[in-house]
Length: 60
Image 1: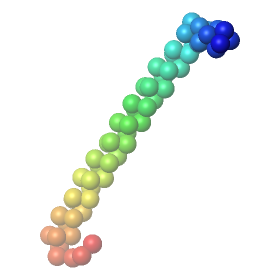
Image 2: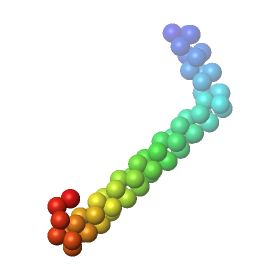
Image 3: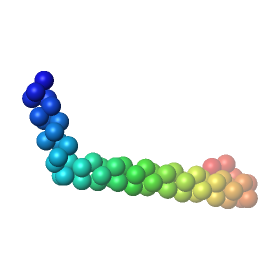
């Protein structure tokens, strides 16, 4: 149990670990925003293609 507490204290006091967690959260947020943007553009493009197909009277 003392070894676990020692490791926990080292991790708590290590600033590199905190920076790593912050960068990981930042990367996760950026990734989520990029995925959301790609999905939004895909939905927008699908709507435009659908409207074009309807206007031309063809099945896409």
